[in-house]
Amino acid sequence: MLMTFAKFEARPGAMPELLKLAQSLVECSHIDPGCLEYVCYQDITGRDTLLIVGRWTDQQALERHYETARFQQIISRFAELLVEAPPSVSLYQVVEMDSL
Image 1 (cartoon, rainbow, N blue to C red):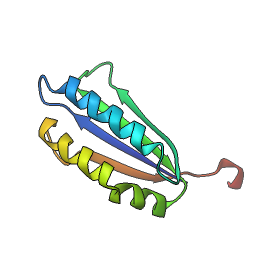
Image 2: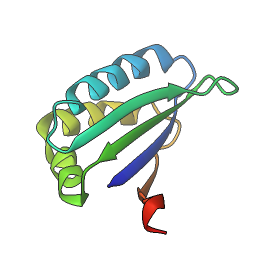
Image 3: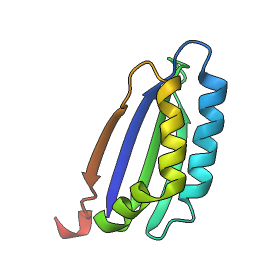
Image 4: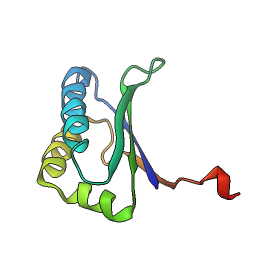
């Protein structure tokens, strides 16, 4: 299982539109095969920052998600709303604690 963490910092005044795009991304990602979880968090200390967390069955499911037209369309609209594009994205392999 994989987890993705994508951190976005909105340009001043762009957060309302960025939140709408993030909501669309979350909704469409839930239907992607292999998506176990996809959620968005807004930083309470720096209100212009969003964190999107995804949990995927495997690398292939994540790659298929990135290749969908929906994902490409929404993400291309993110760039104009961000302080820095591309955003910070981290990928983690989930460690099963039972196997340690």
